[in-house]
Amino acid sequence: MTKYKSLRKLLPALVAAAIFSSCQTTEKQADVTYDLLLEKASVVDGSGAAPYMANVLIGGDTIALIDKDTANTYTALKTIPAQGMVITPGFIDTHAHGDPMKEPEFKNFLAMGVTTICLGQDGFSHNNKDMSVWMDSVDTAKPGVNVAMFAGHNSLRVLSGAMYDSIPSEEHMQAMEALVADAMDAGCYGLTTGLEYNPGYYATSNELNRLAKVVGSKNGLVMSHMRYEDDALIEASIKELLEQGQYCPVHVSHIKVVYGKGKERAHQVLQLLDSARQSGTKVTADLYPYTASFTGIAILFPEWAKSPYDYKEVLKTRKEELRDYMRKKIIQRNGPEATLIGSGRYTGKNLAQIAKELNKPFEDVLVENIGPYGASGAYFIMNEELQEELMLDPHVMICTDGSPSMHHPRGYGAFAKILETYVVDKKLLTLKEAVRKMTGLPAETIGLQNRGLLKPGYKADLLIFDPSEIKENATYEKPDQLASGFRYVLIGGKIVKEGENYTSNRQGKVLRKQVQE
Image (tube, rainbow, N blue to C red):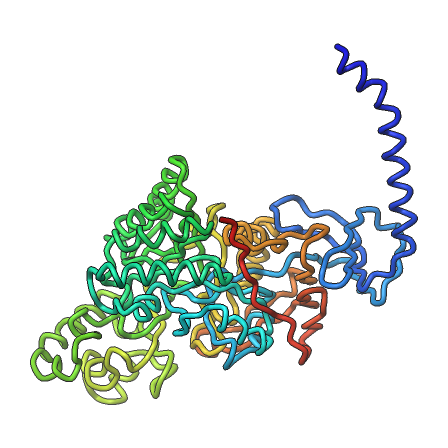
């Protein structure tokens, strides 16, 4: 009783102090000159909460104040009248590609509202053992967007000397563990695996689990291009990843069910992930909103026709077997019209067109003219109804799996397509749900500090736009057309895109994870 009596006596003093503090704050703010005032916009803050009207004030690279009383006046060096538009956090691409030293502008990402990209995907990062040196080089190059880096398992196999060994020696295994630890100490957010590619394909669960333990000890995340994405093997691949989830959070990269069809099949896959969450495993996924994948043509070839095997020797000794395999593989994957070549001399043509042009069977085009490492391609192998159902799951965020040079519209249009197609046209997502999938959810999943939400103290990576104006523009025929409609894109409080004009002063940087032992 004594404690409650004391609180009652203190209450008037506490209220008076709060009022005094509020008055002081108001007076102090009236004397402040902000760098930027975003006036009378609809704030969609990235959390999934309902939009609200407010003035947003920027000081330096940070959101200084969000005032819901839009009648208040402030002094700012620049004011953007934003009435009738929305303000959101900058979009975060959890799975992107590109070389920030060779193509630092990353205009394709900025055009669709992406202010941060995650690199080092599918198990492939750079070939430097010292990740901090590479990060410093990226900062020197001044990328157009922020970069969050992951260490790639395939690259670590090469750097450690394990290469194509199915069971690495203990020396090589310890070298990989040390490389993962060093990369995360340098600021990486975790590890990616690309188990459908060599040399990661040769890794066993024991190897992957050991590396996941290291990632977990550094509070990181394992993102995985899983071993198989085909309908018959998707559950087994997910279970392999979930086993690593004993040691750290895990994430399914570009979730899909190749050859699968319908909402019910999507629900079966999602139920497997939900069951894991109920058992305590942290598992999420990302997805690009297209029904064609894109990767190296090697994905079509059998293991015995790819590195470390000698392809010239395969052609001498097993050519007919390879031709038969490739013919059946392409027919299984919806026929030669469903493979669109995206690099090399045949870019922009599908296998059926090339076969007609060269007057030879499509399997001979692959075996004789392209080979396992002669091109990349887009493969029309997914069901739209199934993929859309996966997209709606609250634990699935949005990615591009694209780059400035990839011959696929996802690298230029994915985030714009979410708004144009799924929010405005089809109305499968509300604006607040879509924004959460592209901002707050990825920031929370990756562990990005002070990004992904629109709130005071967070970095001013922001977008201002009218959702009805957003256009994807990129197509399979012309995949490198920039998205349009974002009125303003800000990175670190600086305007980097206004209308369809881009500043030459790039504002991106490497975001480094702060490891807490």
